Amino acid sequence: MRVGLIVEGRSDAALITNILKGKLNISKSDIQYLVPEFEYDETTLYQMRNEQFSNWTIVKNNCKNRQKISDFIDNFENERFIVIHIDSDTRMEVGFEVNEPIDINELADIEIVRQNIVKKLSEWLEHQFINRIAFAIAVSEIDSWILAKYSNQETGLLLNAKERLFRILNDSNRVNKKEKQKIFGLNANKFEQYNLLSQDFRKNKNLILFQKKNISLRLFCDDLSLFNIE
Image (cartoon, rainbow, N blue to C red):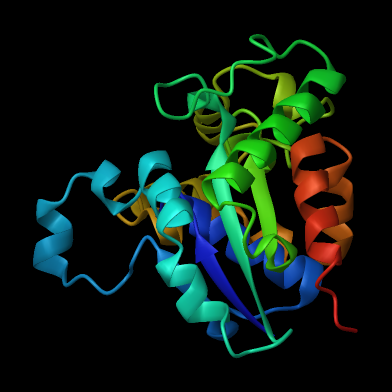
């Protein structure tokens, strides 16, 4: 089984790679990073802003264009599928415009937001390739999925997930000094940093526990179950 990833950024790609390993036992060698591209040389990467690697508008453009999706899937029957990732925190921006519900205060709101974003992505795709796509819709940020490692509550309801995550990582009572040095020593390399942060997601038993604390993560894993060939 081969998987193509269309995601907002490199940190998202790292986490989703580890989830694919934990859920479907798919290794990194069987994953093709369609968006963002990983083939830039070091000089080009240094000159590019983080948002140039990818963002929600680039995800949208690739859904509407569909050339990379078609090139990856066509002529391969059921041997391949695509993961499309997008965070919900930008859903009310012009061009995205998934406005309901405006606030996310209850567990039901998370499911409604996800349903509405999947509907929007399906519209961008003109409903093509839908049966070959797993939707990784993170409510509100994909960092909330990693927060499920450290929290006893639904992390999709927490505001400022990225800030909360890095506050936890700076807490010596939660993260030991050696692990902290590894994580922050990789600050310039977002893929490797989030790969380290999410390495626990490579084991299905951990992933099952994390899903109980984040509904949007569970719903993504439910999508992945449709592609389980075992």
